[in-house]
Image (cartoon, rainbow, N blue to C red):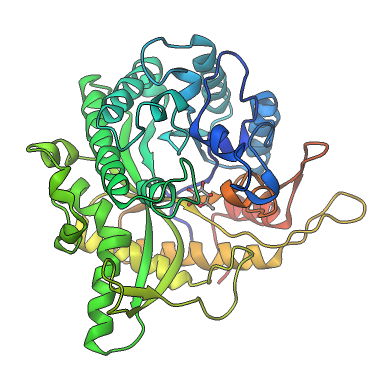
Length: 443
Ligand code: FCB
């Protein structure tokens, strides 16, 4: 399978998962610092205090990317480094870190893709109510504006938000992510204000009239499959689709919320004209894909009315199923129903139990290679059929802090030996380099 010349192969990370240096150069506290330091919130009480020490080892990490031949690097900018209080005073030292990084990437011929919000809200804003507070959307636009003014066209691809579904639902309803709440009203408000922040940030971006830079949003998309052909299950699947996918696609692209969400009580939060602000013309949509979800009707669940069945077959270390065809299906679907619009797969990858060889030189991870190969093939198939998908980013470049799961779950193309911070390219990293070199995939 040939990889089209203009198709970009990259790798992704996020600030809190790799940087460490949480109290350096004026960085403010984020909700993930607070959450991970709260007893019982993460596996073994692990935190991002040091993580991959990327804040100090970024040069080595850029070198690694160059060795792997990676064409584009998706990273996130830590809002609390740039605006330690969330708004107001800009911390130039925080910006300097990203200035150096972006310059090094460009010098290495690696295209930067910067995510503005990958879940590390400044704690100072959380103290004023966080995302459930409408003012946070304005603060986000202010922060975004600082980033656009600083980097302009130097960063060719900007992503406003990473997975607002996770930030809303995992953070405010299920409570397994920061800020650790269990409140449906707060969840709806957080979701709406994240989307509003996205719209305002895109407006701020357009105000800059940049020549080359483009902007989009990244959603996590789940391929929903009904458990049976029973109409109750197909109806449940459509509700699940509204909850998992359309909640954050419809407002952004169409300026509407799916009807299925009305019973949640959205009307109390949405102000007139909000949806016009949220629906801004976008240059691309980012798709993160990890899972397919089989769903069954659950009539006695008054809120959702469905139940997600446990995944079947081979599982990753996250206990997630492996269905590459789901990635093909979500891309087709976004193209058919929300497009045509350029798409990027901004994350895809898998955690497996990686073992460093005794001599400390090798990690054999054939299951990750098979996973990436099959998923990339699914993307190329969609592309060959005319879906305008322009790139694929492996999650992740490096093993890193997997949020509530801590460091035990390894997603990297590169193994990180945390006690020494040594980086060891896994077999999957070598495989990716070969794919990049040959611009072809064996299938
Ligand atoms: C995604 C997140 C990313 C990483 C992967 C495994 O939901 O965006 O930070 O944790 O999952």
